[in-house]
Image (cartoon, rainbow, N blue to C red; front, side):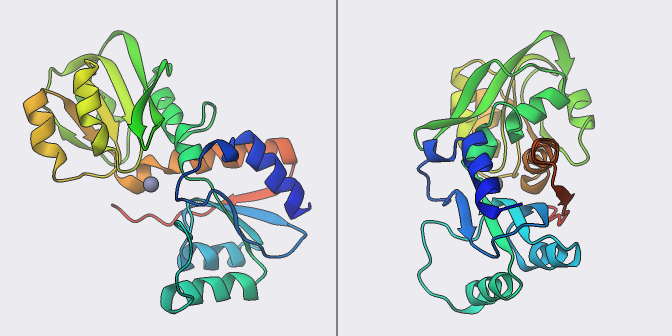
Length: 245
Ligand SMILES: [Zn+2]
């Protein structure tokens, strides 16, 4: 399948043009014209690139790309990554905020679905855009039981254990704690355990579950993989390179 056709589908499905953030969403590195198989990974890094090659994937779709705002110098890590991709004809496509916020396959929607909640309202304003969602359970659920549904979780138990109003911001979502407190959210689920989150959550009486940055952002790429395989009928593979962070 042509790289251009795949990019056209992705750009439209993920509303790439709506996000003018520094993550350079869309095709970041152009490999060959013809794509045989697509790898999906959370991070653009040498481990993901090598795994793509080992799996005969000549396109890689990631959540965290390798160009943030631009490239200042082509040396060191940047040179090695770029050289590897170009030498092996691997194209790199990144979808950062578009894949956090997406209504069908986004990280936040998928996390809410996993805990049995229907995404209701946009939540978590980041640089002018809401990238997360909030929801309300019909009957209260235990924070501890919610946390148990995930492989990795760290709880800050600063509210009541039974909660109705939850919000999710994948990745580094500690910035949304004040918004959660203001909106009467009882549980915020996010990714990275940030030290500065502790006292703000404690003083606001907010429960927080940290899933780990990587774990909270597997959802989007894995769901997007299923959609791409189904709609485009192309071979795909999920490349799991956990950071445990
Ligand atoms: Zn992230």
